[in-house]
Length: 260
Image: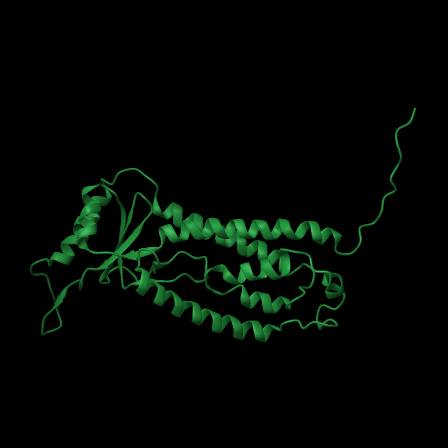
């Protein structure tokens, strides 16, 4: 009885395991980024007005209300924007059952007389809007909660960063830049730095990867590895450029298309 030929076991060559692992990590990170981008765009705060607030109230779509001093960005590119300052500011933000966040300026909280004391007086129309939004929260209709969408977007971005760091820090030395270089690049807004790392280091195996593992801190023959300070400077420059580009696109396309 013949059981066929026996193929002897062979130790994988350097880089073969990485060649199979590389597209898996890169594809997973890109998938996470696309899901995050869709959720973050949908739930990003957008400027609105009292008329839209009245329509949301009439539709029973208001799920939460908060006042503060403006919208501040998150601590890193995937964090959900939050209200700047504590309660009592002139900006009111409300969430809807569809997962949208809208905000508008509701005017000062109170009136100050010449002696420095607060006066009540008549409630201005802007403050009535806050009162109506607050009372509408209790009778808001059921639906997708914005906090769930925003939390999901932030969680997905966090998972993408964790996968990136756990692949970068203990993994093989990168080919095109040092680990510090890619760390600083990963902080570029909108996760574009992580996508750059996937495209340059993880999407296709580089034949120089085996040599980079043996020479993790120096340049290899025939190529230059970007340094950490270069990643820091490039990250600052691209961050400022992307911020300016966002403002220009928001001015051209409007806050509905480019929120912030």
